[in-house]
Length: 499
Image (cartoon, rainbow, N blue to C red; front, side, top):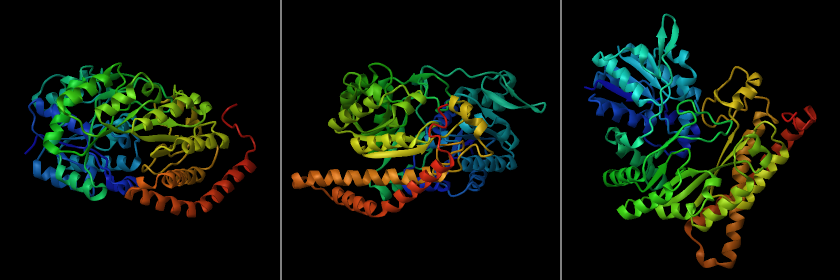
């Protein structure tokens, strides 16, 4: 028996690209909410949809625990949830239907519910939590289960009243994150996650978070929950949790899923010192900005703390596009930060974005040249994706049709008038990945010719992959050239969005 059953709407099985990658993480935001409810004295349970097969499995869990309330609390720290995929929205609708049919009150939280409050309420959600969720959740639970307060005065709570949406006002974000209880890790089937990771990758990775929000103003980045705030846990709190998960679950690696890791001045240095002092080191990956990485000894301190892999939002090799995005970084900073990360022995990942308004073939060539020059270890590629609440969305919404969200993460539909057709960007995605592997293989071959004794088994795999991609890329090049030429014939004005 549990008074409250927590779940979330992201099913790995419904997202083909991520299913192939098979890097599942527990729903961290959901676990924070469950932990907050339990600390308030409520009994809680979890239906973890990440590795579930279908939505209908929720019904069995409801029959097992007989909850009064089902909370579909999406993981605010998972970038896949922030993409607001329609396949997961439909999963949330069906889960709400299932919970409603079982006589449960249904509460939902996440980026997509905030963007589509009326739709969720129309699909049997009784309440939508807007903004940072824990405090609003606790107040509505106290109201529903203990008769405390009036729902009409709960900040951040949306619901239907007299046929219209009632929202009392915004919820102020919590500043002292150290006061939050650690996520309710014990609710997770950790054996299933460990087995899944070990079988596919040979190691086990867990996720943690040290901050909430991002203060930067990239004009395509949606922030429906935290807005422009940025709040951070103390290094001491983070290392204490690292020691806990190290003792309880023994992960081989960690993913710090912050939007920007270690933004506060001096935080990374204090974190590295605390990790070493307390013996909490676990190899980790994180995300950071190239301009911040160049400050002082930041990169060396990250390596000292255990950073093995760093992902940066490179986005484009064209300064014109970075400026149009209001990214606040330069191509020169990308080059210098990458050189320093490699010198420190940290693996480098680039997030790249194609298709931003005004991007020409020449700008794409600059991005490809940057990838060729810097040879990041990994790349993640997307096309510009307008989400509500962003200046980018406001700029292109008049060009958008009925489709406003991607269905799954590999959709890559350009939903506004892009420079090229959507198929061009899908092919460009594959082409860029292939070119990177070809360039990596050539660079490795050069090193092996002069230093043959450094060869490792992984080198053989990379050389084989490079050879394969070199043999299969010609068709892609031909198709890209054809699509680019078609666009030039239809619209000879290259700077369509720059007028």
